[in-house]
Image 1 (cartoon, rainbow, N blue to C red):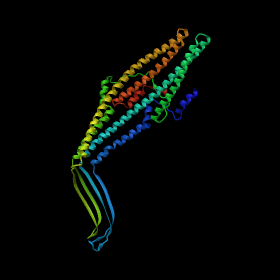
Image 2 (cartoon, rainbow, N blue to C red):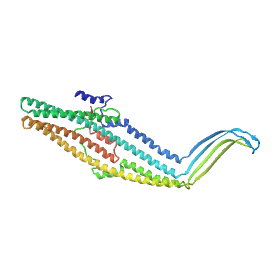
Image 3 (cartoon, helix red, strand yellow):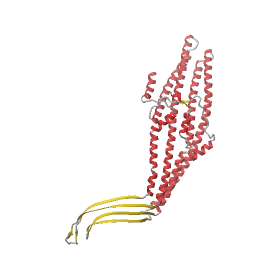
Image 4 (cartoon, one colour):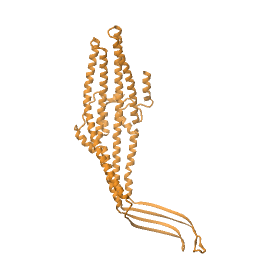
Length: 441
């Protein structure tokens, strides 16, 4: 059994371990989580939408040139060849174009601001998602540790009871049935320990996948930690905040605004465009009377383009944009309803979790008292061995359930804040204050 436990735990020793609390793990995740790194790069890319759209309002300057070798033959009709000039013609031109009226470019510039806002909101969502993923993985890991501790404590208690049952059988004060029952419970506890060790390794690796290194011991919740109701303690206020400020709602709101402006942009396909155009250049070419001639030229003017008919393309794009706007508005309504549902769900999760934690704390005290009573009753002969084993198992189950309820309540608190778009580093710090640093030593 010791060899098997070593094989299960040894992979955790393959890379450096570090003892940490939730805030330290979150810092590591910020630096090493690939999903968060991708979101940061996506934000940088999204911010480039603004300068790209702004370019449509600014002048453009181009330089073009050409050079051509010419081998020609000049003759009269059915007559002799007059000349065979061979020459190089070349030239260059610098062109300047400044849009004076291109309504679709202004709409695109407005859209770009909305696209940047959407990119910013997406990154905020990625940051909130990182907090939730790190916290969930962290809590899963420390729950696995607490579960393993409880399983081992239960196994140790059963081992003592098994030893006692064997001695009592030897002196004739108990039956072989007590020994068999204790042995069966001990074998079950051994199997539970193996499963708990395996689960701990899986949870450790899940956290490692986020922070890029294998964590060592993690700080667990303080025994004296007191959980409290979220403030304000009115679910309707949380629902209203979620419908307005949820990051998902903000993203969909930006998408709806972009879609609305797209309708305006496609409608602008019917509008005329006006540009200031200027050219300066030089060319060298052959003239029959002058030979090779150099030409310098400069011009400036206003260019007007009026679209008349494009085979129905512009009208079709308008209909497409209008349909996309309707879809975006429906997506916005879906986001608002989903945010409201999440706020209700997680608020109730916190409220019910607090009640469950309180009840389990009382149940743990009662279970421990019942265990002591059953042990005393077994010693005086009014309780049998199975009663003690059941009482010991109840203490183990209650302790495990209390740890799970506490961690689930903390996660519901974080998810509630996320549903309103308010989850941030301060919330990580508040949860971190409920952990015991000495437990990670």
